[in-house]
Amino acid sequence: MAAQIIDGKKIADEVRAEIKQEVAELKGQGIEPGLAVVLVGEDPASQVYVNNKHKACGEAGIYSEVHRLPGDTPQDELLSLIDRLNSDKKIHGILVQLPLPKHIAEKAVVNAISPIKDVDGFGPANVGNLVIGDDCFYPCTPHGIMVMLDKIGVDLKGQRAVVVGRSNIVGKPVAMMLLQRHATVTMCHTKTRDLAWECRQGDVLVVAAGRPRVITGEMIKEGAVVIDVGVNRLENGKLCGDVDFESASQVAAWITPVPGGVGPMTITMLLKNTLEAAKRQ
Ligand code: NAP
Image (tube, rainbow, N blue to C red):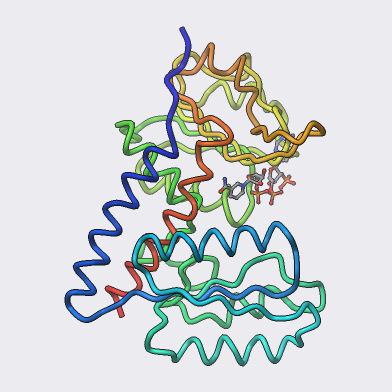
């Protein structure tokens, strides 16, 4: 039986409409949520991401400003800007677009963002709070995945969840969030002995490996929910996920497409975190 498609675009539109409504209500109380996005250098992909974030803020009624710095900006200068944004009353969220040029220590920059404005959720305070289960900003992509699972009505309690990939921005935080929701979680990576066997245990399978079609239908449990985070550009210019959609969709009950699955949720959750930051501040 062919899997049902989890339509990320549709879910993202629904969540954005709710955010827009809440932003309007907050503005009615005299608070305008504000996001500062910092881009260092000319990386074309980063420029597209930053423009999309700026545009999405505008559509949701969120104030946003983009700070475009030259690629040779000294680290101290970037840290001074973050310092100013940390104390800027109209800014509730700060996002530094990664990756940064090589001469800048990413860790120093991420650590400099005030935890109450760290809407990407990458700083040590937010990561620590996520692990101990305290209030925090969930990183946007994992947060979007959890919203998708909720929207299709998955009750994670007691389910076996398998996560392929252990990056700090996707694999680890999503595993932690699944665990918080009482799933039994397995994390896989390049040293996992039998990836196919591990994946086949998953009632929920989240794949964030950055390897085109590394997960095929025979590695998936019948009736599983498959979330494909991967975005890979093929030689023909087309995008594909980390999951082989054709074979996987014959086995899974639910599956996200690429594009149109997890992707649209990421910026949506950035808007949500910015709104949340404004409410908290
Ligand atoms: P990453 O930092 O490169 O991490 C990839 C992880 O996958 C690593 O932990 C790696 O294991 C593991 N891995 C790689 N090949 C594997 C294999 N053959 N078998 C098992 N594990 C394997 O990647 P990331 O930043 O998490 O991103 C992952 C993918 O998601 C990329 O395609 C990225 O573009 C996409 N992404 C999409 C969004 C979105 O909004 N849609 C957001 C973020 C990322 P080791 O640790 O052992 O090396």
